Length: 281
Image 1 (cartoon, one colour):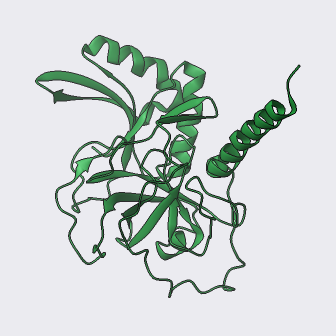
Image 2 (cartoon, helix red, strand yellow):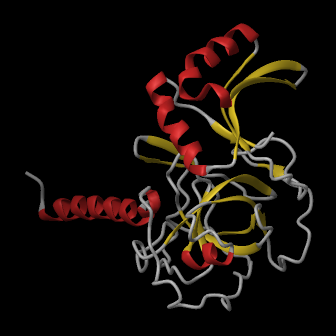
């Protein structure tokens, strides 16, 4: 028989586990969120988040965690992190809930969610279509969608002009105290979701979904033939030299349409392909 104290302890642990999961991973929902009625709230005057030194969140930085059966790993350091990819946003559905860092989510604040950056951290987000820039505080986990790298608050998305479309092609880079969007950000270190040059000379030519990289051309051809039914005209093989060895990459692209990219990714599992990533060249 368990004593009452042991039962209380077990219930507390179970409750805490559920609480952390429910609060931390709320933005894992893929369905489109909503915000205030158009024109009812003016967020144009909301200032950027101001980067400052903060201790790591006590609850937001486990070595790894699992959502929807997939394990994610939290980075030890965010120094000079740069990543390009697709941004989404979340609003009323999670407004007032607790975030992974323990703070309350406020869709009118300049905040965001990321899968692997340590919490909290500050990032500059650039909309690569219109070159608008903002600074947000990353205090939550998400978005847990295959083709998204960051979930912005309602206000942050509004300031980048991606509310109506729901997504945007962006570059994110971590920044520290004293940084403003008028300053340069130094030499970047490429993040896990991007390859190639990440400087400001973005040519707006689109992105690729890479589904395989092979040391032998014959294996790349097999992969291309296998996935051809998804979209033969968007699928190609390109070669690149990595650490002195030639690698043959199988990729869909170039793409500019996020919905099309999502459609391609959703079909990959039907062909037994579950690993892919976004690349810009």
